[in-house]
Image 1 (tube, rainbow, N blue to C red):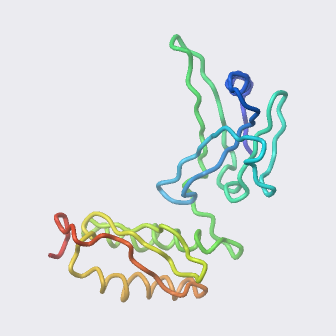
Image 2 (image 1 turned 60 degrees about the horizontal axis):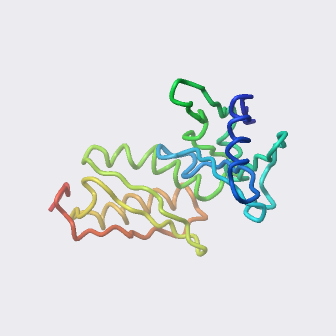
Length: 192
């Protein structure tokens, strides 16, 4: 679970006391299990926490932990180091970028794992990459291409014959993929 050091607890308590509204703190990981994962702390007004959030009670505040982020915050640490300029709050979450794949993994986690473990290494040879924007309610993966794949003349083949085929074979509950990339900019495209 998350370790909040004494210095961090005191610092966060001081920040909360300076607010002109009642709040606590919420921690979550954006884009968990991917290389782009970021661990975030935010003020959380009384009505902004979710019923599924985990809670750690401190003397002057509650730390709410987003349920989806829990497995990515194993061994995380929130610390505050005082220095001559005031100090610095740091969050170390070594598990935040590690995919959590198992039978109970979410559809988003399964798709991200395949994108970053199998598909992006292949696209990198052409200077390209792809990442998941969202999973729709009807179970389509909405993807965005970057690098040499943006504007590439072969992107439709890559999307349908490579990415969609791989994803739907390995994640059978996924119905398909859709591309939201603006391919009109082909300045860096691998094939023009």
